[in-house]
Image (cartoon, rainbow, N blue to C red; front, side, top):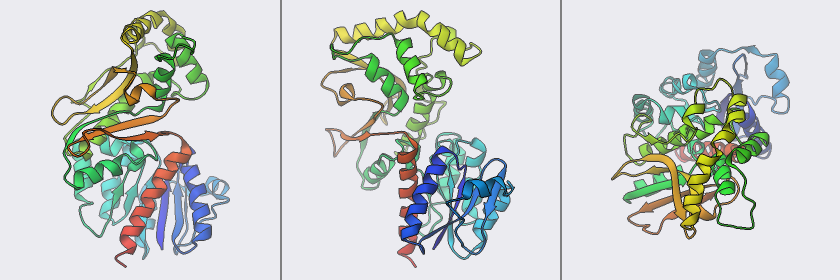
Length: 360
């Protein structure tokens, strides 16, 4: 039996609870969700007993005042190995990982902050998970949600392959924008860039303020994570990141004002697109890990023959060029969404339980 504690039962955390509930119903002696905490309340169930996962929302609303230290102590106290699932995007929560690991608690998370932020925190986390008996940290869902991106990279590195380059379209939002805006398919009506951003925003594909997508920082965090897993001391400060928000709009006060003024810059994006299309190329916003050059995040041009040029919808695509794979190994699919992100988290939970079960 392994005990599970969930931090941040929001959209992704709530979906994870659904998946765990279904799994536990068929394998009742495998996992026990014994603790859930949000910013104000928490539930703690003693003696490795599952919380009522059909009624956790109502129970949490009436739960104890949130106390992250008591939450961790509760999970550390039992006889079973515990795993904390951080489903937040909080810097503060990520900073707690070393404390949890020192208590012997493993961590699984889609939170990018602990793996792309301060390099000393990242190295501290690594140092506390270097043993073969746990605790462990898994964070597959920090890059590509449920896609096997980090596991593939880890396998390449561990088997001694030499990474030549990693490049990818890591943002579902930016994938959608440029797949629709920059295409060689003449049957598709050409829309202004601002119109496509508006459609994406209206459909919930962007952050509430689309500048949080267009500034490239989400992609930069994923590139930093990949670079570090590949063995490079990459940081957000050393990455070259192209912010495609027009400079004049970066400081406007609200998202509404940004959207109102964005059409004034449609000609800027049109010139970039027309130049690419005139050469049978398309625009794609790409992150690159280059061990022998400059790792970067920027708007790039690709010919029609390139896999990135034919991408559809909001899919992610990641190409690993290595000594063994001179023709890139490609991972492609949905890189965002609650269900696939929860799947990525859940698969990491099972990896930890399998590693530890083999030693029992």
